[in-house]
Image (cartoon, rainbow, N blue to C red; front, side, top):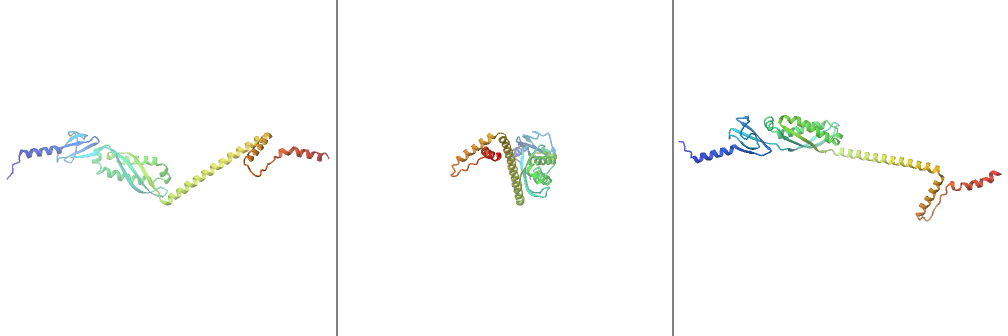
Length: 260
């Protein structure tokens, strides 16, 4: 016995099916629609944004966001080219540029991009020296971005930037780097001190040449020294007498001896 279906129930069922067929996509969203398992194009509303109409239970709609995704790459144990073990983590910025390839070509583009970033991070940093890893960060970031972008391009994913965040060194290596930096600072201090001594000796030599050419300059320097000594208010003051000051007296004393 078939129970009669009221027109109201048919109306409600039709209204529910119609509402299930309406999908509203935001400005940053696009839709990938499958009809009977095949990719469908040219439907009412297209792939968005706006209202997209599908046939319930026949069509399947998959939403894809086109916004930039910021993803942390978990810390990776990396052995550098000079056999130093470091722990490195990074952050990757990417977005979907082709929603159809992002759904069809790869099962989960978010997970796949994360795995690709981890393996590429270990591979690229493993070919770098520790000093390059610490000093040439921008070049390494550019290499990571270029390589990962080439790998994700078939998936319709565009990698815009990759940044290495932290490089954790072993305690022994940190102490070695600290000793190296300290030795470098001491070397620079000694070089600067030696350069200062050399420049001061040159100035003293120039001053001695000037004074030797003009004996009056020596007398003026002698008087200036006396003034500086007197300003100290010492209880005992010793006046050094230059040989040039008493030289005439020696000449007078030596004349009678020569005459005899």
